[in-house]
Image (cartoon, rainbow, N blue to C red; front, side):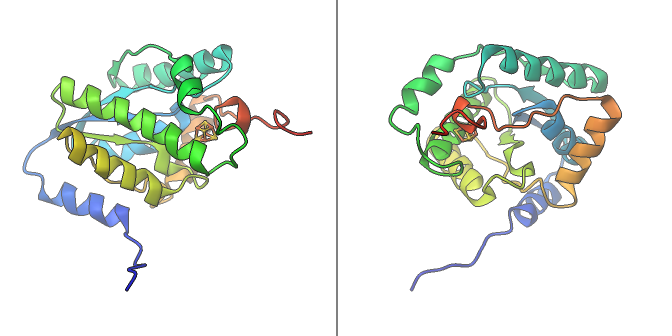
Amino acid sequence: MENNVKINYDHVMQDIISSLTDRKRILLHSCCGPCSSACIERLKDYFDITVIYYNPNIEPLAEYQHRKEEQLRLLNLWHIPHLEVPYNNERFNQITKNLEREVEGGRRCAVCIGERLKYTALKARENKFDYFTTTLSVSPHKNSELINTIGLSLAKHYNVAYLPADFKKHDGFKKSIEYSKKYHLYRQDYCGCRYSKKGTYEE
Ligand code: SF4
């Protein structure tokens, strides 16, 4: 019989945090400054956080740079370190070939999320972090089940611990908006790739 019980990833995260006996190092994949704000707030009492801004999906380049500058501005204000990585839009184009017309939330997004989490997992392993995770679940538009399933599978494959999360819980998204207002952070109006930008594929 099929098991349709939904996992509460916020509870899973809380259970892991409760079991910690000391502060751990975590590599937090972030999609943008606003989303990272609420996640950092949630994790900072238990983890030494380093942020990785690996987002080869964000287009055009000027948009990628603008989001990155805003991310770094927030991290500087909060004294949170970040791990510098290159922009690799070619990689995104390669892995999403023939998925151009997928709807948002479909197969292209699973591939896109998988790429960003895989890169983060490898960097976490290389730099001996205790955990890796992502800010992506703070968005009400993103599927937490999918994000966490990918994260847990990568953790198993690459032998590095993943911290499951559902950062939209506890008013996470609302808090990210409040922090954006407080620090005048730029908030984009599309997910990131050119396909998610309104009008790109309208005929
Ligand atoms: S819509 Fe967002 S998650 Fe989906 S492929 Fe584009 S950038 Fe990635």
